[in-house]
Length: 163
Image (cartoon, rainbow, N blue to C red; front, side):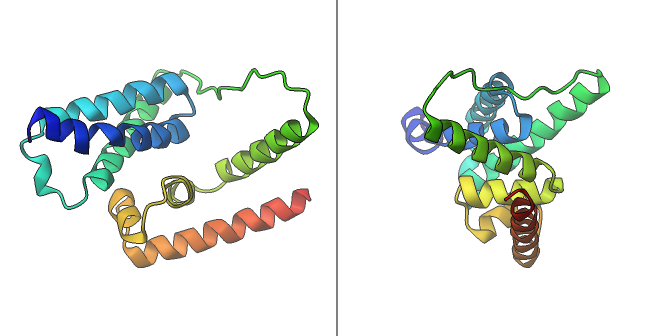
């Protein structure tokens, strides 16, 4: 793969890698570092990358694994994971209400099992197909459907309790 091919095929995938890392790490700086690391790793293996049917799914899987490694390392070092917070001071009631709603949904999603969180993120935010999610999450497509269905059902039940 030439430099130009890499720029056109791989570099645009940094945003999906970043979004997944941001979701898993809950930290902008770590997510940026991880997404850059994935691009660097893909560059180093650019001659072999064409062997993969779905480079995006492969990169997302690498991202997930690297995030899990970082989280394990942080927990071993007893470093607390902190959520980053928006510091916006909007007085617009609609924006505040929307922000509260979004925070509630994020909080409810964070209470789901990790596999359900991952599947919801990949389907809802990254808009991956079931087969792509299966590849990234090391699940069968049927298992992805079951996990997604259960996650949505549980999220809906929890959300209705707050309404």
